[in-house]
Image (cartoon, each protein chain N blue to C red):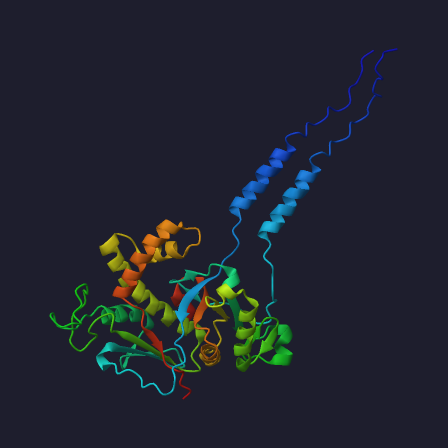
Length: 160
Length: 207
């Protein structure tokens, strides 16, 4: 008889779970960093044109987005196939753009209200008539800084 | 009596280190996607009482896009891939004779009297149809911005030995240090002053 209790034959020691919290935290941090909060789901087709002379849009909090394009298939029945403007989550007419900009501007902190950029994410098959209407509205509310958001690439690919 | 040992315990002490290593790796390599595009300024709404400034016809470079995406540049049909060249020739012309206040000392153009006097006077006027496709419009915009950028690059290389586009990107990058920014700002504004971007967009025609 020994002083120390002998292990029973064949018993497998339990796997240490001390590092489990680390793994969980790692996953948590990973997803925290890569997740981009999606603020609106796209209801329009949005294949952007290409351009080579692009500048990056830094500082996401200073950007107001306007989407333009043909309604996607599920909305085609209700809204037709003509290009439409999407503001936040709903389809809008050009005359609502001004109000939307003012509303979004009011939500931002005071000190950046003057340096906001309007990013126009326009499908490459849209026609310029709608864009001109939007530009007129933007001029009315003095939102003069616009960015035609594009993909980086050769601009001549657009013409095909 | 021979004793059969259970499976040896796996050492888990270094698991945390591995986890952190992975975490830091992903932190460093993951970039949140940023959008890019062509920056433009819209003209402010002018008060209706103000008379438009008088600009000499030779200082205006007109670009018209029709509904089929064809270009009419200075009253001639032009294919879109020649646009950049033509716009650069116009901007860089420097037609004012030496001695006149508008004389352009850094221009390398042909100095044709019928074309623009000075890059600071030259205006590109862009007009498009309501039916023009957006992708065509972006291509034209891209070429015109490209013409300015090419000329600015040339001057920036001559003055500072650096590309204008690279300098501007560094200046706009929020990670650049303030002291570097200060220095770049001066250079960037100087080059911008040599070739100011005067791109006017007429209201869209509907016919």
